[in-house]
Length: 483
Image 1 (cartoon, one colour):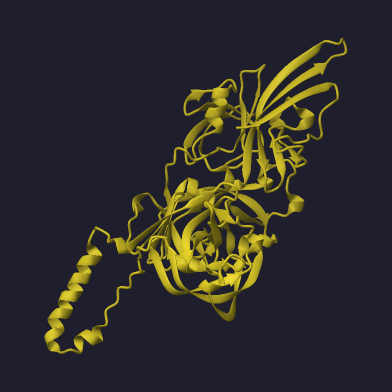
Image 2 (cartoon, rainbow, N blue to C red; image 1 turned 30 degrees about the vertical axis):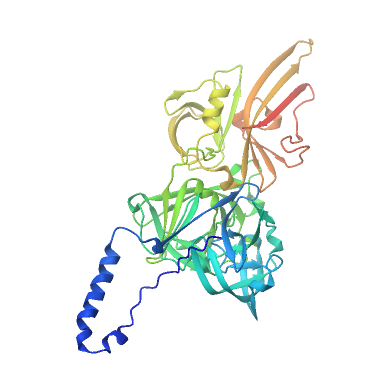
């Protein structure tokens, strides 16, 4: 790694030493303070004030990594703002780079419901980009439970870059491309959604001012999770609300942060190592829609809307179209004011819809994350409504969406058959191993009756084995493909 270093600046002046040289140095002290004031107010940042480190995104694990040098070893570290400590994997480190102390501390990993005892160690030099730390205290433990890949681009993965080092800087900006450490503010605050920033069990967390509950900001996981107080015994078997919740957090200035979240029962092990006031976890998939800035100097966390035209997105919309009708049915599986009944989708952004051809399907199913669209719908009561929806990244709820075609032949008693072709979309909820269909299997032609849930009993990566099929007189040809 190139040896161009940046020591973390420390703006301190030993006044006693300066003043002790005599009254004749008073003028020198005044000049020194004026110089420091000018430096603080200067709009141009010095190179030593900011360190920019590119991020590597592993599509297989949905993790972000930073390149680092530990002693003489060059490799990668998982970026994890929910880890209170920077931890190295004992099986991946060379002993010559480590000074062991035989003293141990407890470290929590909320997502994995794991607490482990890690040994405190010292490393003579650590580089994260151009940021250099000398004689740095880190931790050493067995991280095999994380199942991290062994290498990235031919270089080993050492362990985790935790929040203990990240919060050393006044400002930390995280986007999907890079992490920026800085001693000076450089924020478009007018567009940000800001919340109080707190530290809980060593993790970065935002405080919801309205409920006084906390959300852990966790770059070590992809999906968003929310603690559900609803018992599994009372959850509806045909309801998408059993799995997902639409979360709206309002800041002090009235701006709102919206994101979908996977429900986890409050007794779920995910929350065992977290304080009771933690409402949930916000994962790194949110970086597809926002740049996150942690302002440690003012104890605030900012979410700044980002525009990434290539970011994968979805409106969470289940679609259904019988080719014999000039109607497209739809339902949002997650979002504000989501109902359980299908509606007729009349238009999107003023574009009228009457069929589910390939162009329309792509138009509705592949928006960039962060895209805002206006939907005009007609409910089963005949009411016309306008709904605004923001596209999110499907990894925020660990979901995948597919397109499907069902061709049916209903055999009549006179041996004539009625053929029908239906196009629709399917949501595969990996966290619960469930395929969600926009109709009930025993009432195939009536999507307004709700959803069908098929447990994950797949015969291949994209071919669920269907259960609860209608009468044997109804013949199916079922095709499914990724969107």
